[in-house]
Image 1 (cartoon, protein in one colour):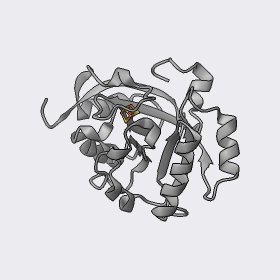
Image 2 (cartoon, helix red, strand yellow):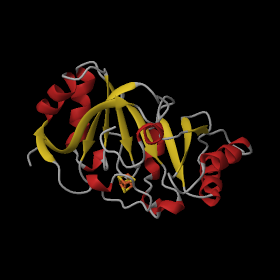
Image 3 (cartoon, protein in one colour):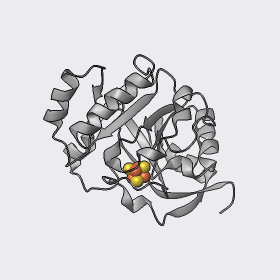
Image 4 (cartoon, helix red, strand yellow):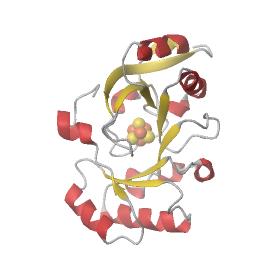
Length: 216
Ligand code: SF4
């Protein structure tokens, strides 16, 4: 693989299934590979394989689809360093560019125009030691910080994390139920009595098309 290519699992058009832009038409570029192994991961099919495609061809494929919003996702899109360059190319073409990242890779090399959706890995994921805390200082007020909670303990941990890092009013705070592990009704109850303000972040594509469908 050379510096002008990326390993891609799929490119498809849908709506934003989660994030603060839920429901907005979007083209997704799912990149291959992830160094993490979250216990509740729903995209294990992105860990291996994929097609090697030039950055220019990726842009051309996305341009052939109509939405002007593109999301680079994975796997972990920033595990391939050329992703920063791809983001710059999309920005130059006038796209709104979103990046869905685990928070375990540096985000400071992304163009400032990108909308970053960054996870903070809770203990229930088994990956909380991978959180790159230095990323927090690079988030913009328009970016999203997402906590996928697999239990009440994870939710309480998330509240404490927000307080300890003084994140309220600095970034959009999203709380998502780990699908199949937490009932969204319970998460709503927790949010309503939380010491910090989270926005409920359901993965609506799973409610529309079911939890196991790819490419939506
Ligand atoms: S970071 Fe994302 S893709 Fe990687 S293991 Fe965790 S949930 Fe799966």
